Each structure stands twice: as structure tokens, then as C-alpha cells.
Amino acid sequence: MLVTSFLRALPAALLFLGTNAIPVEDHQKRQASIDAFVTSEAAVSIQGVLANIGADGSKAQGVPAGIVIASPSRSSPDYYYTWTRDAALTYKALIERFVSGDTSLRQKIDEYVSAQAYLQTVSNPSGAPDSGGLGEPKFNVDRTAFTGAWGRPQRDGPPLRATALVIYANWLIANGNQTYAANTVWPVIAKDLGYAVTYWNQTGFDLWEEVNGSSFFTLSATHRALVEGAALATKLSQTCSGCADAAPQVLCFMQSFWTGSYIDSNINVNDGRTGKDVNSIISSIHTFDPAAACTDATFQPCSSRALANHKAVTDSFRTVYGINSGIAQGKAVAVGRYFEDVYYNGNPWYLATLAAAEQLYSAAYQWDQLGSVTVDSTSLAFFRDLVPSIATGTYAKGSSTYTSILSAVRTYADGYIAVVQKYTPSNGGLAEQFDKSSGSPLSAADLTWSYAAFLTAADRRTGTVGPTWGEPSNNTPPTSCTGTVACNAQITFNVRATTTFGENVFVVGQLTQLGNWDPNSAKPLSASKYTSSDPLWYATIDLPASTAFEYKYIRKSSSGAVTWESDPNMSYTTSAGCGSSASVNDTWR
Ligand SMILES: *[C@@H]1O[C@H](CO)[C@@H](O)[C@H](O)[C@H]1NC(C)=O
Ligand SMILES: *[C@@H]1O[C@H](CO)[C@@H](O)[C@H](O)[C@H]1NC(C)=O
Ligand SMILES: *[C@@H]1O[C@H](CO)[C@@H](O)[C@H](O)[C@H]1NC(C)=O
Ligand SMILES: *[C@@H]1O[C@H](CO)[C@@H](O)[C@H](O)[C@H]1NC(C)=O
Ligand SMILES: *[C@@H]1O[C@H](CO)[C@@H](O)[C@H](O)[C@H]1NC(C)=O
Image (cartoon, rainbow, N blue to C red; front, top):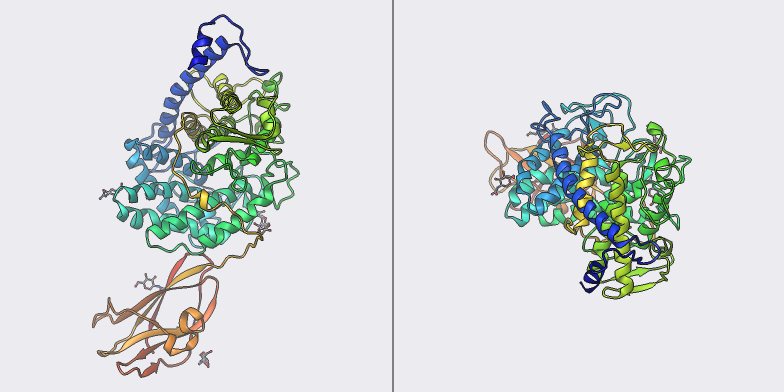
């Protein structure tokens, strides 16, 4: 307050606040200009997002309700498809807005739930619904499968969708609508989590659809979804087979992407790249937890690792784009996907530049909550770019060093917004890319993800954040990693068996869960749906996935006498999908 009025009293002064400071008057003008831009562009962005969603989006006419088109562009490039990833990240932004009070979005969110429930049933080149089909990256806008050649599968879609829907389900529960959460939203989430548990340890294509390997973004999205999915299952008295076991193993695997100075975004692939890729920055903003500390293991935005990575990734673009030339170290630059990129000859992307800003706003939020900033040997170079005199140490809120750091980081973050502002046309339209030499918009126009990225960056800038996903109690990787996690498939045994009063039916078989053939340990079936015309006995039992076994039904009289059905033994093999469900329909022999 004092400082502000002192500065205001010297309007013409060219007052420098350290090496990176700019004249105060210019600084204030620039600040006002960025504030105004953020306000106007956020308004354009929400309209831009809604225009690209069926059924009533102005640029998505004739598209079914709840389907998000990636862009209205139908040629050069043709992005008139719906991607599971883009749609989920877009809806995550919308659901966060809804949870923060924009009730107008409710119907659109319910339409997303229905549209995704439908897409989960569509067989496609990645597989059938219960055999890998959820990993299909994109569909035609009419919800039919896209059958052309593509980089598939992409395993980030299911966990990203689960995260968006978990935020909604938790809101429903907190607002007295457990029924809709359990009966309508949970079944969609459960299938996505089952996919994640089953496939997290297999390779797939990264978010840029180019590299077939292990992607840091996919793994970090998977970790978050499994953690919050397992917690939601508990709240709803549902099972999430393997979620709680797989989550720490995914976190364990994520540690191997850290090179010691930055995150190598793709491993288990020989892609000839350094791995410096905005993939990792987008991971940090997606898994940002407002309740978290600056945890290195989960690469939180304020963690030393994520800050060192921010520097490594953004610095890698300083020399490759003409529009970045002459910009000093420590000042924001235009950011692309990865500096070796050749798509459209390799250019900056709006969503990548916005992600660089969003990580820093999120970090500032975390330091403010935690009440201090720690500079260590890993993050020192990042901080030195902004505050050249800084030394390692912990600086408490209220100290002048803390204040300088926070102010420098926010100014640096605003710099990325200023880059976006500079290259955004006057109507506010956000394409996918902007030309590395001229700065003109390039590739698909009105990219939904660009607008969604603007919305989340603008929210973090004002300290508006989503709910916690449980990072504080799920941020310690086990000491040794394994890719093998036990998971179950749910089998419903239905048997038609006419019984007399006092008789009960059981299933017994080769697995521990089926009593190891011991009639005393056999599993009871229920007669709650039994009628004289349909003498149904049934039970739903969790059995290990991908397992072949033999079984039989037995009946026990009221005196305990056991009658076995006749030979042969029956056999069954459970599906490979964790959390999948199936039924067998038998008749007593
Ligand atoms: C629960 O949410 C659904 C979806 O928005 C809505 O249709 C339904 O009316 C809600 N029920 C209650 C009791 O609020
Ligand atoms: C599977 O997990 C193990 C243990 O973390 C890891 O070493 C391996 O690279 C992973 N493989 C894939 C394809 O994810
Ligand atoms: C991706 O890599 C895996 C091996 O890690 C391989 O089995 C699979 O066929 C590859 N997929 C494509 C489309 O090349
Ligand atoms: C059924 O399985 C049990 C236990 O393995 C075995 O003892 C029995 O011989 C099998 N019955 C037939 C008909 O194969
Ligand atoms: C068993 O019957 C139910 C309906 O009672 C049906 O939904 C299910 O598909 C059947 N399962 C098999 C394996 O035929």
C-alpha cells in the first residue's frame, strides 16, 4: 500500500526495481492492458468453447448434444472430429466453472455425461468397449467410429474424462444428488478407470499423436484419476478394482521421467528428441492440487522439479522462433510443443504459451497458501532468471525477498499472456498455432482447446482453482516399482434351479474366491428374484481378471446335506479388463 502510493507520487520517475524491472509507468500501463485483455479474451473464450459443442453451438450445428468438436476447420487441417482428450480437458474447465458457481452450464455437462456414456459403447479400431476401445483417440462428430489410419491407441483420454466427471460427481454428492452421481456418472467413470488400471503399463501414442511410447502426460493424468476415482468409489460404496493398488505404481513409474534437470516427456521410445516438451508443463497444470505442497514426486507447479522443467522447456524455444529473437532471458517467449517440431514447420501454440503462464500462476497460489517460497539447487537457475541476486533458502511470506519473488513470477507469467495478446487477432479468435516468424494465426481456427486453455489460465491468474484431488495423501511413491497390479473382474453367476423350501444354492470352484472346491466355503446365491416361472439364483463375485477356472453349483438342504450338480465341471475365463463385468447363465444339471 505504502509502496504503491509512493510510486504513484512519482509518475514520471524511471524507477527500476532490480535488473528486470521496467519503468513503473510502463509497468502499470502494461498491467492495465493485460488485465483488460484477460477480461475480454476470457469472454471470447467461453463463447468460443460453447460455439464448438453440439447440439446448439453456432459452429457445431447438427452435432449431437454434448459432443465437442476440436475445431470447425474441415480442411487444411480437418479437425472436424471429436477427440476424447480435447473434450475432457474442455469439460474439465467447464465443470470447474460450474462448481465455482456458473450454474448455466449444468445441462451442457449432463449432455457430456450422456454423450460419453454412448461413445464408450462404440467399437472402433482400438477395440471393443471392454477390450481396449476406450483408448480410441477420436470419433466422427456423429458419434460413429473413425476408421482411418491414426496414431492409436492414446491412453490419456479415459483418465482425463474420469477426472472431469469425478469433479462433477463430487459436486453432485455434496449437493444431495448421490443418485445421479451413482447411477449415471459413476458407470462412465468406472469404465475409464478400469481402462486405466488395465493399460497404464503399456505403450501408446502421446497427446501430440506422434510418439508410441510412455508419455509423462498420460501417466500423470492416470495417477490423478486413479487417486480421485478410488476415493469416489469409496464414497459411493462402489468398487474400483485395482485403482488403489495401481495409483502408487503409476506414481513410481512417473519418477523415471525425471532426468535430473528436466522431465523427459516420452520414454520407452527411441524418438531422437531431448524430451523437452510442453507435455510436461501441461501435466503439472492438470495435476495441480490447491491443497498440495510443492511436491517434487507429483511435479506440482511450485515444485523445484517443475520449475526447473519450466525453464528447460521454455528456454528451448528461445532460439528456434524468429518472434522470440531479442527477448532477454527471464522474459516470456512464445512457446510451442517441443523445439524439434516440424508440424506446419514447427510453430508456437496458444495453448502451450498459456500453459507456461498457468503453471506460474498456480505456483504463486501454492506459495501463498503455504506461506513461503523455497529456492533449492534444482530451482535456483529458474529463480535467478527472475531475481538475479537470489540464493537458495526458504523465504517467508511477508519478507521482502518473498515479495520480490512473487512479484517477479507474476510479472513473468503475465509476460506469457502478453505474448498471446500480441499474436491474437482483434476479434479474439484463437487458432491452434501462430507463425514463428510473422506471428500470424496458423493451422485450425477456433481451436476449442486453445479457448479452454485461456479460461483455465485466466482463472488461475485470479486465484480461482478447482477442488483438491487428494494429492497430499497420495504423493509418496513406493520404494520399488512394479508394472503388475492385481485387478478383478466382476462375474454375475445366474443359475436356473428349481428348489424346495429350505434349500439354498451355492457356487463352488477352483479359485479362493469360490472356496477352492470346499462346499463349506462355497459362495451363497440369492433367491431374491426367484419366481416359479423363472427360478433364478444369482450372485455377483469379484474374481481375478484374465483367469481361467472350473466351477459347479451345489445345493444345501436345511439339514446341511450337500448335493452336487452332475458332471462335467463348468469352465470360464474372466476378461482382461480390470473392473469389467460379465455374466454367466447356467441351468442346474
Ligand atoms: C440430479 O441431477 C440430475 C442431473 O443434473 C438432475 O436431472 C436431477 O433433477 C437432479 N436430482 C435432484 C434430486 O436434484
Ligand atoms: C511398466 O512399469 C515398469 C515399472 O515402473 C517400468 O519399468 C516399465 O517401463 C513400464 N512399461 C511401460 C510400457 O509402461
Ligand atoms: C507401439 O509400440 C508397441 C511396443 O511398445 C508395439 O507393440 C505396437 O505395435 C506399436 N504400435 C504401433 C501402432 O506402432
Ligand atoms: C472337477 O474338478 C475337480 C477339482 O479339480 C476334480 O476333482 C474333478 O475330477 C473334476 N470333474 C470332472 C468331471 O472333470
Ligand atoms: C445372461 O442373461 C442376461 C439377462 O438375463 C443377459 O443380459 C446376459 O447377456 C446373459 N449373459 C450371457 C453370457 O449370455
